[in-house]
Amino acid sequence: MDVSFEPAPLQTEEPAPSIQQKLTDARFFFLSLTIHIILVICAAYIIITKVMEPPDFVAEGGDGLISATEDLAAPEQAADTMPTEAVEEAAPSVTTPTLDVISTTSTTNSFKVATASVKVNINTATDLTKATGAISKATGISGGGLPGTMRGRTGSGRGQAMAKNKMKSATELAVLRGLEWLRLNQNADGSWGEKNQPAMTGLALLCFLGHGETNTSEQYGLTVNKAVQWILDKGTASQGRMSMEGGFTQNGVYEHGILTYALGEYFTMSKDERCSELLKQAINHIIQGQGPAGGWAYSFSKSENDLSVSGWQIQALKAAHLSQLNIPGVDEALDKAMTYLQSVKGPQGGYGYRGPEDRYSLSGVGVLCRLFWKGDRGDLRAGMQWILNTTQAKDKNKPLQYKGGDADLYAWYYHTQASLMFGGEAWDIWNKWFQDEIVGAQNPDGSWPAPGGGPGPVKEEGLTGKTYRTTLCILMLEVFYRYMPSNAL
Image 1 (cartoon, rainbow, N blue to C red):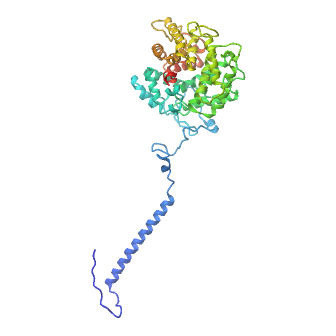
Image 2: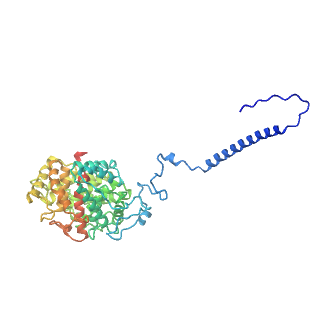
Image 3: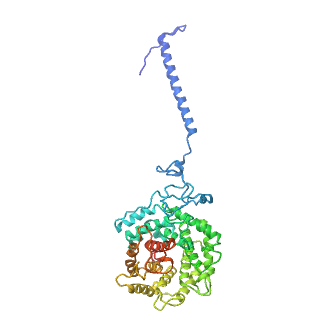
């Protein structure tokens, strides 16, 4: 608002101010006072705010340290941090094989445990890629960090492998049911089985690893971690003898090979440094136990060779090779083993027990192990053809019968892997024979019943027998993504 005024006349003495003049002066005084008070208050607010303001963690951390969906009251340990010794002692234990899925997340472990059982609804084969993509998000590893032959276990590689190798929806569901049965029937100490626990524990662990599950997996992290801790405790006490005995016995060499195989796969997938030294010790026992001819035998006696025993040692050595630990002597032992396999090759391309022979139960061992290590498909074609012809000769209309007297899960375990690794028509034929037969034989609880035939504990009704045949069946059904053929790299 504009104000106009005229200058007062010149006076020799200053007249007393009028009431109107006093009011005008007071108005400007209060206006000035009000402005200064406001400035003081603003300055004080800025100073106080600056002093109390927290560090700018969000700016430092990009997306922030805690997302909007995380529980602010319960920060968790980073997923890639291994549990300390004190943490392992505090890990919860399962006291009964029928315990429900644990619903609490342990704040002392580096993995999460799901709040409910796995529930996957797959309606068509085209749903497999989407379904497995969702499951892969719950695992603690990325396919990019795995060797080429193992990248089908996680991420997009899993769905692609399923589709390429013609895996049916019901087959993956059978695998999930089987894994859940194994989880529920794990012993409280982390092992499996009532007897032959090293072998049963190794086979069970291989099943979880074959599905891409490690100690950081959401659904099965606790199961895997308990098994690994049992292996570490027992294996260390036995100085790397994975049979958990003072010296190698006849059966002990089987158990040593199987459990070392599992430990090698686990280290490759998890990079759990707790296991590196034990794995080196266990592999060294295998290298030292190899005979002059390149094979292995009962009690690691070097006087003769046994293809059944040798198969597990070769698989363990291949797992050690993939671990990238560069353990001395591994590749040389594998090269030597291939010379031994050639020496027991039969006239029709199959493989024998202790000499040249075409034996059905062991020919898959020879073909698979040679494919695992620098095998030539042209050289192995006759053996693969002999396996298929011999299988079909049992029953032309239904070559594989789970309840038939000729059922041989041990042989089928190797034949299934050998067929996929060989590829082509051999795989197409075997896949048509085995997939529906194995899935259809599964019990409602996720285990598999005793087959109609086969040697060893596969027909036993106790927990060891159930674990043995269930693990063999799961490993067969995981073949679609567990190991990719070497020519697919």
